[in-house]
Image (cartoon, rainbow over all chains, first blue to last red; front, side):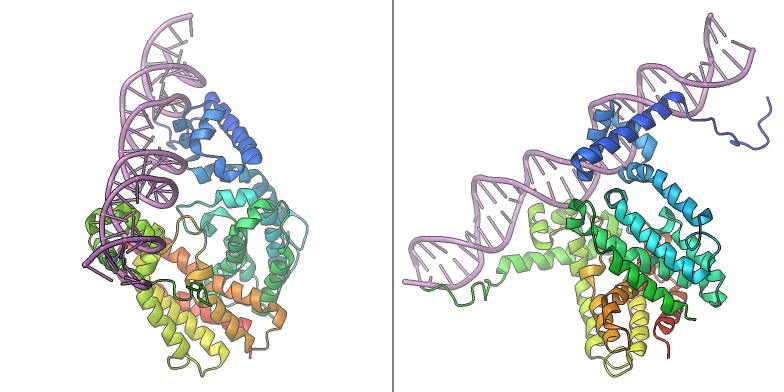
Length: 204
Length: 204
DNA sequence: AGCATAAGCGGACTTTACCCCGCTTAGCGA
DNA sequence: TCGCTAAGCGGGGTAAAGTCCGCTTATGCT
C-alpha cells in the first residue's frame, strides 16, 4: 500500500514484447546495413522490414543515430573492458603516457574497423559526439591526473587531447571514399602523429 | 569565333537580378536571425520573407548552412586579414609559437563573439567543418613548418592542433544555454589551456 | 533595336526524421 | 482466473531540407 521508500527504484522491467521487438529491429538494421549500406536504412524501411510500426522504432531507439549506437554498443563495451581491465599498456599497469599512446592507437584501430557503423552513428543533429559517446574524455582526464600536469589544466588538456584524437578521425572517416573501402589504410600515419603529439605534451 | 584560349577564364559575371536577390536574402536572414533566433530561419520562411522562391534560396546558397556561412564571411575575412597582415603576435613578425598562441586566443574570442552565427553555420549533414571553413589548418601547418617539428609530422600535428583548438569550442558552443547568453564567459579557461598545450608541444 | 541563349527563377514535389494519440495487451495483484 | 492499468504499439500526420523542370529574362552580340 505504501509508496516504496525509493520511488522508481525498480522501474518495471522491459516488457517481453518490447524486448523482442528490440532484438528484431537490431537484427533487421544489421542486415539492411550489410545488404544496402547505411544510407538506405531509413526509419520507414527499417520498420517495414522488421514488421513493426514506425512509432515503435522511435520508442526503442529515440532517433536514427540511436539505432546505430545500439548496434555499436556491443563492441564498444568490449573495447572499454580492454581499457579498464585488459593487459598493459592499454589496460592498467603502464605509465600514463604509455597508456595515452596505447589508447590512441587502439581507438584509431577500433574506429577504422567499425568505420561503417561509426559513420552511421554520427548524429546529424548534434555537432560533436565527443561528450557522451565514448570514454575517451574521462579516461584522459584520469590519466593526466597521474602526471605532473598542473591541476588547473587537467580538464582543458584532457578535452583538447580528446579533440585532437577524435577530430582527425571523424574528419578522415567522413570522407566519401572511405565508406566504400572495406579496409582503409592511412591508419598508421594517424597513429604515429598521435604518438608524436602525446610525447610532446608529456615530455620525459 | 574561336574558343577563348583559357576556357571559362571569365565565367560570365553574376547577373544583376541574382546579385540583388542575394543581398535581399542575406538581409532577410540577418533580420530573422535577430528577431526569432536561428532555428526559426527555415528555407521556406526565408524565401517567403525575402519574396523569392525556395529554389532561388538553394541556388544561391546551396544549403541551409551555406546561408549562415555567407553571413559569417564578412567578419571571417576581417579576421583572416588580421592574421595574414595585422600586427604581431597575431600577424607576421612574431615567433611561430607566439603566433600559434595568439591565433588560438583570437580565434576563441572571435568564435565567442559570433557564437550565434557559428552555431547556425554548423552543417548538420557534415560532421566536422574544419576542412574548408577556416584558415586554421593551413595556417598551423605553415607556422609549424617554421619550427623544428620534423617534416613528416607536420601535417599530422597541424591537424591535431586544429582539432584541439576547434573541437572544444564547437563542443562548448553547442551547449544549449550558450545559445541564449549574449556574452558567454568561460572564454579564458579555454584560451589558457590552449596556451598550455602549445607551450608543451613546442618547448623552449 | 532585335535576337539567341544560358542563367536565373519559382514553387510543386519528394524524401525523411520525428511526433501524436487512440487502440491493444502484457503482467500483476486479488 | 479475471480485471486493471500503464507500457507498448501502429501508422497517419507534420515539418523542413533539398530536387526538378518548364517558364522568364538579363546580357552580350550583331
